Amino acid sequence: MPETQIIPATKEQIHGIAQTMREEGHSLVMIHAYLEKDGAPVVMYDFDFGPVIREYEVRGEKELPTISDLYDVAAQWPEREIMELMDIRFDGVDTSQRLFMPNNLLDGKGQILVTPMEELIRKNHPDE
Image (cartoon, rainbow, N blue to C red; front, side):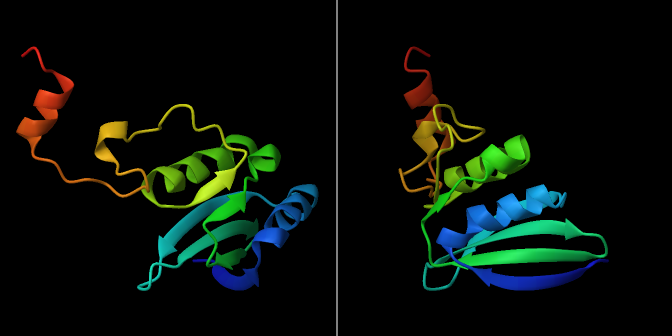
């Protein structure tokens, strides 16, 4: 299992960091996020350095620049997933269509609404 180095970064730095990683030939392994117990978002960008994964960690930001202009779908897909599931936005990402969550299952802030199946059927198929 590779060693992980966690490096703090700011929202203003992350695009430049990603650009440097791309220019140096480092693959983007993953972008992932979670919310702290107090609701503060944490977004991590993992880059391949052989036996080491460098993880740049941005804390407390709900809006970040996309890096999909540098890493194409490798960045766009996880950015869109995070946006659908959490109240975090990546400026510049096309959100005209959802990846997997229909609009009627979300409260507008990325939180999944729990709705009984019968109610979902009525909303989506009123003629049945």
